[in-house]
Image: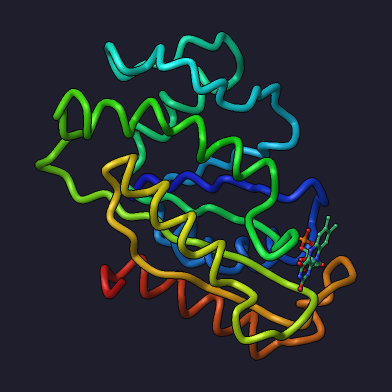
Length: 191
Ligand SMILES: Cc1cc2nc3c(=O)[nH]c(=O)nc-3n(C[C@H](O)[C@H](O)[C@H](O)COP(=O)(O)O)c2cc1C
């Protein structure tokens, strides 16, 4: 299994990252390849809506997304890891997603399906401070649509509410176990 983990929080070792590492643990133990991309450390411009990708499915912006396209193209499992920011994905994740407009163009304008023969799946990992019933709705919808553009099947989400300060998740050992079980489900192909 080749897993790419897109860390979307600016906070190192925060809640979403800590949970993601528990999800990843069983995959790493099984010998899977895991690559972390810390989006906040990269130079990523937002999509300019220029339509440059309409012609060939490639983005014309010359920045760190170039390497990200290559890395995610080679992955068969993806984790998008984001805190909830104002009821949605963090800006870092949103920029990543918007730049996948190039893949949307490839799939839907150029009708070029990506590596159709191989199963590629993507998941959302997210944490939020509050506990509202709709707190993850926006992030889930956006993530589903990003993966669809990438020609990646949406495999589901691991969500944790009511955690705010850094590493607050560690006060919930049962949630950490649930995260590890989520990773085992990914590994076993159950999700
Ligand atoms: C700019 C910003 C916006 C936020 N917006 C929300 C929000 O709308 N709802 C919520 O429940 N928590 C919100 N939070 C809290 C984070 O989602 C929460 O602390 C989360 O666990 C942080 O994850 P991290 O440690 O991985 O960064 C916000 C935090 C920041 C810094």
